[in-house]
Image: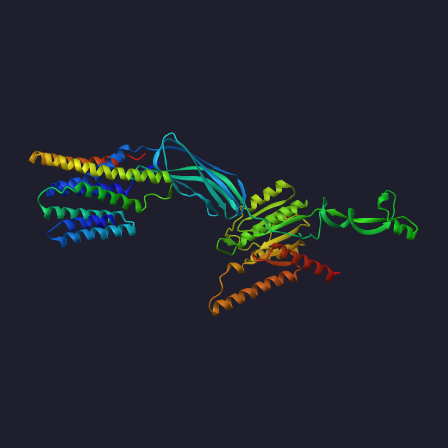
Length: 158
Length: 424
């Protein structure tokens, strides 16, 4: 449902090639629904990526100023992703109330944090001046971020 | 302890990488905003996650229970290093279910915290079990990585079959030399009147029958039947069984055997048992509470063992049965080897009683003309087997779940009473 709202946002806000944007978004929504029903994480990822593609297409067609709602979109997308992975069976067994409350608090904090970080990033990107050096630093930062994540995940088994 | 990475981490990494690459390629800073949480959340979660160190202990409320009883299992968790999410699964064998609580259960446990989980267990089926292996899985806050390990704190749990109501026990034809509750054929010290005879020096005055003495003018004394104990051997046919819906003929046989063991031992008889099947196992008769526990503990370890090597065995070794013992056979009459062994026992002069555990309630109703015909032929063959026992003078009672064991035993008692009258 939340992803449907997310999918609807670029389709409703855009004014060019709305049908194409809607088709890409709907494909993402369908893939996400399919992934939830079949409990396939890979299909979920493709669904979320399709929404990213819809949003990117919307931004590219839109042109002009920065989308000020991007932090909220990011937060909502993170919430959708968390809920999707929770529902396709994170672990087994009935959870105690305390654990459920902790999960709710942690997810809310993560979503709030995502919106905050998104806002800060937008402000930072707006105040920085464009240039080849900045662009290079951005590429390097992106590569480093992914590499660091992979390194942390691949810690040796104990 | 095994550390595994969840598919969610790969998904987040892929989304973050795709978002950042697309942001650079398309020069859209909004995509960086979109991708950043997918990179930051797993990074923070993985950096903050710690390997859990949790001591686990499992305790059962008691080691022995009856079929149908409920008991409690306590799982104690003592965490040196906690876990944001810990899933605990107590492995339960078939025959034990959960009556209260959740298995598995997910909880959060902090460092230096102790938790006690209580799980109600329901004893569904008799048997000897070992309960106490716990499987644990700890996860970080957002479920990107998990640690799995197991703790083996198994302890024995014996579930005894529930007892059947038995009103009158079968009386053996022959008794043994020790005192007991059965009226023996031999004369001796007892209560039951046996005969009159002339007084001889050494007879006790209390035994003088004054009425007979007055009538005949010389001293006559009463003689009594001695009260002796008996040897009872329970014969369990474990060649094969019929089962349906978690119940089987072996369940009924064990229930009957446990009930008969307890009742005969109560009245000072010596009780032993023989399991005759893929494996031959026997206990020589003895008396007392120790023997009761010994026998019942052995009974609950009984199982059907298919053995094709013993396909021709139809004789029990001589050592397994004491002379003059009453043999009560509990059999579904499904295997010719057991039938042969029982007829051989009768031919060797043992006092044999057959309680047929009917396999019919465990069988599906025949569907189709051929199946109906096959069932009729099968039932006729069973009637033939029963006829062979009756020809050999062996009382046979049919018992199933719908009738009480006492009812079957009463039929045997009536059979033996009629047989005595006919032979007199």
